[in-house]
Image 1 (tube, helix red, strand yellow):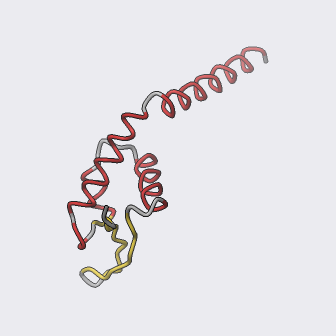
Image 2 (cartoon, rainbow, N blue to C red):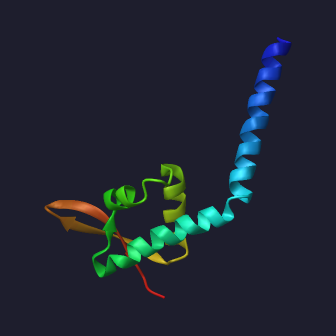
Length: 99
């Protein structure tokens, strides 16, 4: 029983330290990723970019982090999401709003 408790404690401690480090020490890394994604969306102009293209372009960014960055960009109104029909299929497209 004590071994299980110790194991669970170590897992909990490790997970919290990992979260703390990724949220505080990598701010510059996150800023670079935000910039990369924003510049890519901006480069597509008024045509915008779909999720598949973002995933291809941002392969080095973990899916959860990519979603969080997109959510932040949408909430800060730097980009918008609109639905368009492309090749007969409704597709969500992200468009840069401008400076």
